[in-house]
Structures are given as structure tokens and as C-alpha cells.
Amino acid sequence: MSTESRADCKIKELPYAERPRERLMEKGAKNLKDSELLAILLGSGLKQKNVLKLAEEILAKHPKKKMLNSDFRELAKIEGIGRAKACLILAAQELVKRTLAVKEDTLPSIRSINDIIAQAVYLREKQREHFLVLYLNGRGEMIFKKPMFVGTLNANLVHPREIFAVALRQNAASVIFVHNHPSGNPEPSASDITINKRLVEAGKIMGIPVIDHIILTKTKFFSFKQRKLV
Image (cartoon, rainbow, N blue to C red; front, top):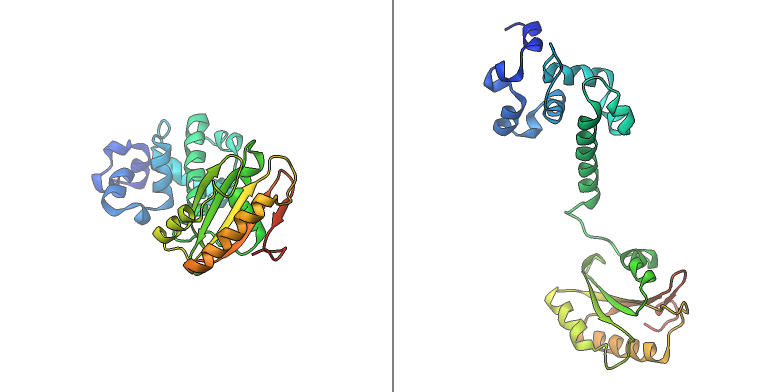
């Protein structure tokens, strides 16, 4: 079959081994050409032009990097794409971007107060006190995060046993505590200081040190480590 006739014929009329979907199932996505991958997303071509030919022409006029940065209106204007296919392409691109951002083979590094706050920023908006524990490995990476207590915190409520039992199950090397003050005042209360002291002492006994204890408000924070209370 000539090149021209291949462009005119429907995908179903192509030899089985040349159809994009079938090639993907047999060879794997990584072995397909860019045009074949785009053809699968497009799904169908135009009159007198099958989806493979259409995909090749689109990529010739609109390189991958340009398409990656195109918005809905720009994609929808491309002949052969339109509104529905533009939505599909953008959704696929966004899913890939988010997947790459997750980096499942790595863990969040906790190197600074900003890193700690980033893991607990949602506490700034809470109307009740929440006590959050970050569990770290020996490289300072967060391996687990667990909200432990909700409500007015006191020494009877926040017990070291529950916190360090989780640390042992997670094989944590160290811990960080974060809790919020809905009042807006980041300074620790007498109860906060008592709780922190008990937890720090328990950490020393368990061999799982407390790295820091942060109090958050909507706009401010207090670090026990900075004040040499850890």
C-alpha cells in the first residue's frame, strides 16, 4: 500500500501491525512514535485523512513542547483537534505533569522550618487545636505524617506513648511536632511547654529525638528549637 493510500484509508483498513492501539498493546507505549501516541489520543481523523496522517501533520506544525504549553483555546483551533480532543489532550498532559511532580521514588526532605510548615500549612485555618506529628527517617525525609490529637491540648491528652508507638511501627529515626493556635498568638502556653518537655524527654529515652516543635497561627509561627526548648 502506497504512502498516499495509507493516508486516505481508515485505521481499520491498515495492516493490524500498523494500527497505533494494537502496536501499543503489543510493543508498549515507549516503543511508539510521537505521531502514533497522539493518534491514540485523537481517536479519529478527518475525511480523506486518517488519524495517523492527521497526527503527523499536527506535530509537524505544532512541536511537542509548543503543544505542552498550549491552552484549551489554542489546541481547539488546530484543525483535526477541536474542543473534545483538546480536553482529552490537556487532561492527559496534566495527569503526566502531576505524576512527575509526585516523584514516588523520593520522600519529602525536611531541612528547614519552611519544609515543616509546608507539611502542616492546612492547620493555619483550623478553628480548633490540632496536634500533628511528622515522622522522619535517618536522612531527614518524612516517611509518615499523622494527626494525633484535636481539641484543647493538655498534658493528659497528648501522651508520649501513642506518639512514639507510631514512631516504632514506622521505624522513624526522629519526630517533629506541629500544632496550631486558633487564637492567633503563637507563643506557647504553660501547657504547651509542659507537653513539649515530656515529649522531648520521652524521645531521649526512646532514642527517637524531637527535632522541633512548631506552633502555627494564620500568619505567624513559633519554633521551640529556635528558642532552645528542644
